[in-house]
Image 1 (cartoon, rainbow, N blue to C red):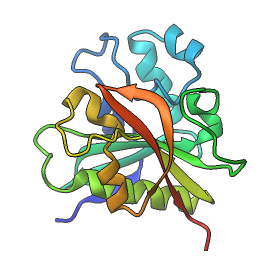
Image 2 (cartoon, one colour; image 1 turned 180 degrees about the vertical axis):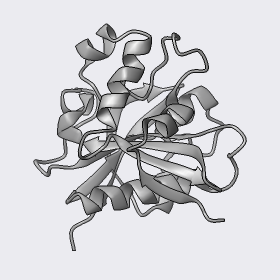
Image 3 (cartoon, rainbow, N blue to C red; image 1 turned 45 degrees about the vertical axis):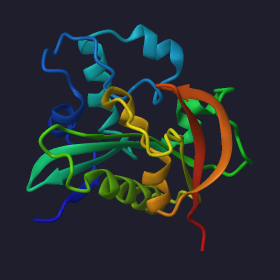
Length: 191
């Protein structure tokens, strides 16, 4: 069965990919870039999951999910940049006034890796943004030049993952993750 990409509108499926095993753990829930820094810092433990429960009910929801044979297997966080912490960061440049969408997280659950789900998530996230009128999508992956990236830091993706989806490098950044520079990749969606 092919990988199915759907908007993240079902909390239980989103929690299966993003939530911690212990509901009281202080996990990211992919909120670090979605929220402004103060709100992100203030939300603790179960409140983080409850915040995601609210976000999946919004239009548009906070990202897309990948289903592998009907099982929630992956996530891509994508939303208008203006609604993310990237709107205020100084480390990742703003190229112009285009109301771009940011794709900041690509995560595949253990047991589902090695099946091309990351590629499907990036492509599905782009189509999701396109369907909501996005003129362009930006991503901020590491430029690892083929070197191994620690799995805990691989959520931002790699330059080659986004190049495979048609993104081009638009700018360098002042951001570094896991010892690798992050680059600004962009895909224009206008005809």
